[in-house]
Image (cartoon, helix red, strand yellow):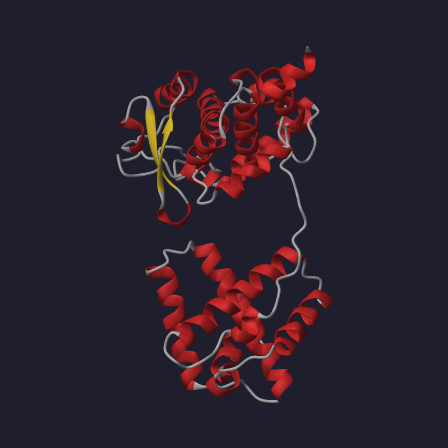
Length: 317
């Protein structure tokens, strides 16, 4: 049964509260469209599981007091279907969000969810690109483009990813108005949160050169980076270009646009940047998200410790 057909089978009460929950996530929580889509899909998959488990589409009474066994059964089925720990953890978060939405209205209890642990997440560290290679990726002479303005465009975008730590979506959504701030950028990131990012002279110069050569003139409120035919530049164009460049430069498959953002943070840390500042520059809501970078350059941190910590200096005597 496809998604649309299944949703038709939902009880009117569950369908109504599901719609209100999604509206609250989009409005009050300002959840990104992709996360909203994932939460909707996760809840739908759970309701489909419960339909098979109960023999009929679940009503509010069936969802009012879920047991840990219900949730473990769902997670086990998703794991058998090939879902990894991150997907399962997000799925549980989506279900928990919906049940808490019902709980606020006195229609359900989240006790069963509280007693269900999310699958243990694998610890993964970013794979930064060496500084020399990152600089080559942003070198206009390396772009291998026939059109000078397209080479300048790619240079400017890659410079923003590595020089400012932007996500590719943030770089490609920049408008002429956004770029009129001189030495800084106001970036609107995930969840609509804004942050101030310094604009290095080399990055500003790359953007200026692109705009000088670009044959198109987007309106002030439109994205400044254009595709070959004048429309907004799509992320896959830059992703494809970086795949081509990493092949030419002998870089691994992990050298992606997002790896440039990781490299921005890692290289700042290696050169004495503090985590709080890097957290602000990246737009992370939690310092724990930024702390993953401490594992990337532990040798550098230990070197700083050995040279600077009083106990280390004492032991050197």
